[in-house]
Amino acid sequence: MSLSHCSHHQLEDEYKKTDQNESDMLKNLPREKGWTTEYVYQYQSVWLTPTFVKGVKLVQQYFNAQSTDILLATLPKSGTTWFKALIFSIMNRTRFDSPSHPLLTKGPHDCIPFLEYIIQDERSYQDYQFSCLPRRLFATHIPCPLLPASVMSSGCKIVYVFRETKDVFVSNWHYMTKLRLKELPSFPIEDAFYLFCKGVSHFGPFWDHVLGYWKASLENPENVIFLTYEDMKKDPVVCVMKLAKFLGKPFSLEEEREGVAQEIIRLCSFQNLSSLEVNQSGLQHFSPHFAVENTHFWRKGQVGDWKNYMTLEMAQQLDEITRQKLAGTSLIETLHVDTIT
Ligand code: PAP
Image (cartoon, rainbow, N blue to C red; front, side):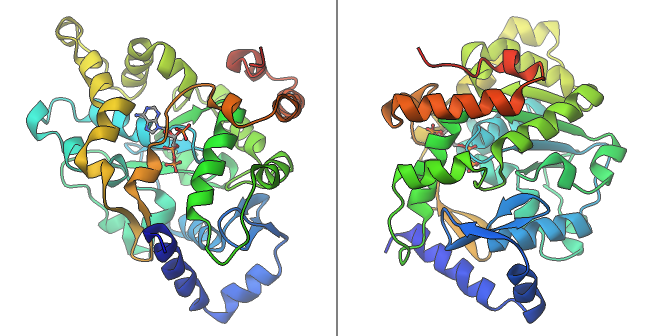
């Protein structure tokens, strides 16, 4: 049994201990076949594992955003790990020398926690204080409309990262297969594809998630920035500078001369981070009951890997759904979603 399976058992056991009210609540939610667990449940129009139903409810109940907070929002497998490292490095660039940089000894997920994992009770956020930071940095997979009202009213900064649909699907399939409970039947890519197209993916439907943050970025451009994985790959210096400016930490002329942005990009690169001992071994403990092998966060880190796993027919079908779902928005041109050549 792999460690990730072991940790999922712990997670499931914990879930079995949940009180009757929670079990009753789940029984009343629509459910579908799950990717890692037997079922996922539709809570407030979003598909979630039982643990995340609980996590989202707790965030809604207890998280009170502050104006100085920075929130990285993503769908799973859209570049969360990479952007956690980038945001952490941008915000802390004057605090650490290269040899003592926290990212050399801590995984990106230890530098910026997920809202939906750290919450245990109402004290979690009040107590949460990352010792080296003046500002709180969080990440979340929760769709924009489901976040507590304080997130928008506080004026905190939200960084949303979009990744091309087919690459997100393929990355999810690889990751979820590794985390899937061992007593469940195998999960061929065709089964995953059927669910994904129906909108049944963790924190999905994919398109609703994207549209929610896209709309928020149009309504609040000062507070919500919409970036893409592909742009960061193609033009990292421009993207990192844009991100730093948005976060209120623009690079000075001196920093530009010294190549500070380039140094951050190198530090956070797939090649560099995935080769570090801290990311090559051990477990990422998201909560006392849930941990994932660190190596699972680093697979290929490439644009267009979908071509190695999806048939042309699958790709065309998914592109067509994306075109339909995003029709009528300028997003469709921005994202170059039709990548079939
Ligand atoms: P999460 O939402 O579970 O935290 P997330 O980090 O968003 O996962 O996604 C992991 C993907 O980002 C993997 O993509 P792949 O399966 O297509 O390879 C992973 O390889 C990629 N990734 C992780 N770190 C980096 C990085 N520094 N640069 C580019 N891609 C990265």
